[in-house]
Amino acid sequence: MQLCREYRIPHSYFRGHGTGAWSDLDRRKALAYEHYLKQVCPSCGTRAEEWDENAGGDEDAYRATTHRCIGCQLMADKQKEVPDGDDGHGVKVALIPTSVAVALELAKTHRH
Image 1 (tube, rainbow, N blue to C red):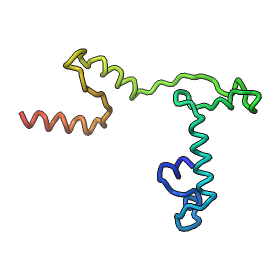
Image 2 (cartoon, rainbow, N blue to C red):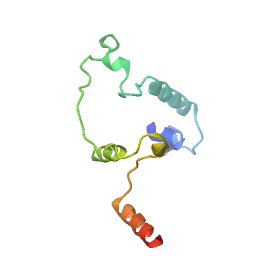
Image 3 (tube, one colour):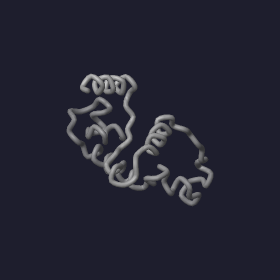
């Protein structure tokens, strides 16, 4: 359903049936999926029912773990170089492929 939502296509069409017109079943599936998404915590991605034993869940349904993303680490390190105050306003840190960064540096040196 996630891909159907992203591409805005009926589930039946995604499965290779029909013409792409929304059937009653497709609409009900889409509405049910939207309802499901509204129940998901935007921070951790779980739903209250998954933790609630009275709703069939389990208080040990998930375990917290750590993961280091090297890209996020590089961005956080670079963010420290952004100046405070007016000089840093609007400055964004982004990742670009090394080949693109090198090409941009070469273009910059050839302009000056």
